[in-house]
Image 1 (spheres, each protein chain N blue to C red):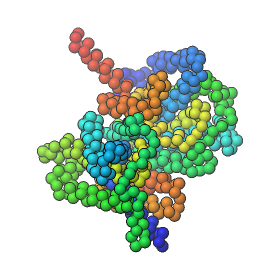
Image 2: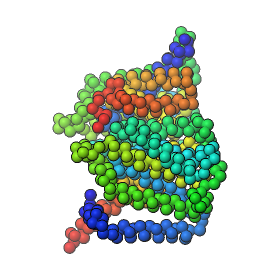
Image 3: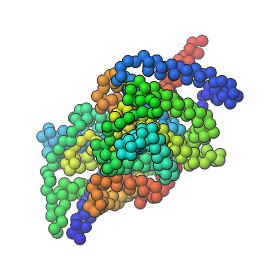
Image 4: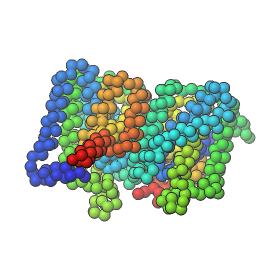
Length: 333
Length: 291
């Protein structure tokens, strides 16, 4: 932990207003308003909305990766459940979109309890393989069931709206997803500095030590999964207004890989890391007009490069450069 | 009764093919303690190498060893540039991400260079089936099974009786101790990585005529290989063979008697159950698995 973050925490506990965070929040809100009101192209706005949804998924993946240090390859399953739930609710059950979102989040949380209870005793590659496996099963299930529309998927949704906000309008869509993303980030920031957040951090750094200090490692890991699954489901639901269709492909492991890339580009240690990564990951290829495969190739190579040079992401890379520069200036003085 | 015997034969033949895909995975895990998520990509590289060589007019049986060499060279370059620098003696989560990213990059590169569509690979065995006591066995599958058993035996004997093999076993048990005993650890790690990915390439080249070559062909096979390796116990070659035969049988039984469209889920469900209830596998060492 760096000195500044300790100082920040000490400040928070004394009840002083954390100016740095307020400033950050303000500038982010200003940025969102700027983009939302400034941009005119519906395409750009809905892309920005989708980016926020995708960032939400990356944030959820980072709860696992940055939180407890596991690689949840099968996290796309929760994303898929979140996408399928409103689709099924609207097309088969006659329920509105919001109800579907809540159903998906609830279902994914229940499923996360079950899955976590079974699998979180495993760590490392074993957890990743089982997690990948579960998403594989989920995808085959979606392909074979009738209620999911089989390989064709579900489409032709009636009204994609949350309360009075109609998400088929690109500007509303962007504002809604950005607001939800911001809300989740604020919750997460509070969770991070809570007892639970500290327990997670200690487990990530050394599970045996954490256990010896009286932390119930298994339970805290389970909590992390149950906490992150509904966020992934929410992300899945929020991507529907952009994609307009839900196919078994939403559960493809490639989606998790995309999110992992976003997380790693931004850095696992930073709360905003996944969001920055997601923005780079979705916006840049659009402007460069990349073929999807070139995109995968380039970003995979970037990931490998980051992991080889700076496993902490761009964030760490910047810090590394900063420290080098500081050292150089000290040397001169 | 006839159907049952035919199903069992199919299963065993299928399983010995799986063993070939799995053996590379198990060697790399046994020595380097890395779960190589890029295994499927090397599998695809092997298949595409055979395809390209065949298009150049080289007969299939000669293509196979050449393709293995091509894959070994690619593996060597990647070992030198990436694996060596980033994977050894680092945390597990880095190796998962890097090998996964590597696999994505290789698959994307294949799509860009050759194209996304499945391409047929010709083999002299073609679609012919040999009839034994009234039961049919595909000639290509028999060829795969034979090669697979030969390769697995070769690997086990080599690990047990050659000096290099013994050194690799020493590294897998205790890398630092091996280093202090004067074993060239980096070179032998590179060697086991090469052997592992070459085995994947060989499997790809052999299985390609059955399923034709497409960029993501490795995915389904590496998933099966994970099942096999975990069932057999990561790091054990005998276990890989045993696991492969069990999975082969299970798959062919399921396909015949239950459902074809749900078969892809079977492999996953088996992996999950094995990991949950039997994490050390059939022949694995228990201490490797739960941390």
